[in-house]
Length: 276
Image (cartoon, rainbow, N blue to C red; front, side, top):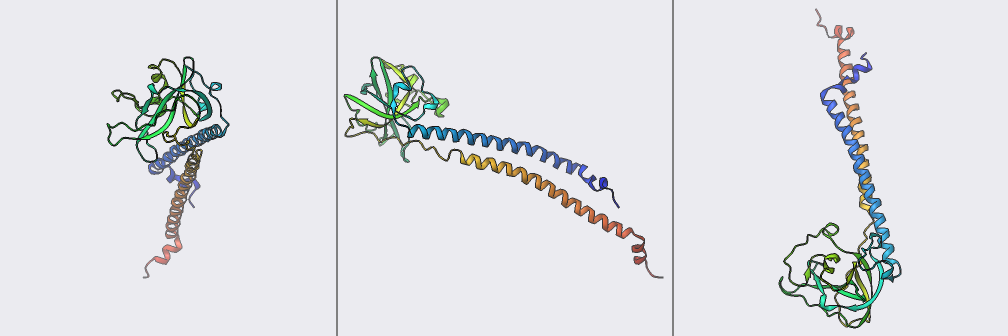
């Protein structure tokens, strides 16, 4: 009868040692990937809840959340605000490469002067691109006189937070980023360190750019949760497959050993001996 140690000795062969190492490396890797996906789920869910709450909250005066030279906080992204002032159409800008509903176009940025020496950039909306790449788009004029704007407060864009690479040499009056720090360098007043995405203005003009859609908060990281569970299920599959291979190998070796012992038994040798 083979000893237990002898039966499992195959586990110490090079082939099986390699398999053990692979399994031992795979398990912590899958644990790490699962934990990372769960972390992303929590992060995105918190962000989704915060953005949803900001969009659904009642509008508040902008000066309660932002002021000239003050950066808009991340927690205030998409917070609905109201602000009154007059548009400075002379310093209006177009933001290139802003597709909407499958069409290429521009955002229209117009400073809204809110008081003595202060203003905020208002994204008045979207206009389609011209007939050619060099053709200027048709932009509805900003309304004159005192305007009350309601919109979503946004932090200024940078290459880091937008993923858009800025470059020089653009046509006059056009930019690639809503970078309020750079835009403010050429203006005669101080700018809020962010901008307002217009949703409503009073009095309402006869024509205006198309409104920018509200952000899609998505499933709040639901895919990350599913991926996290999937990675941890892979741990069970890896361990279960490893155990199954061991059992199969053990069963085959046990059967071979039993056959060999049966062939070596005295009774089996007499039975197979040739008759004289």
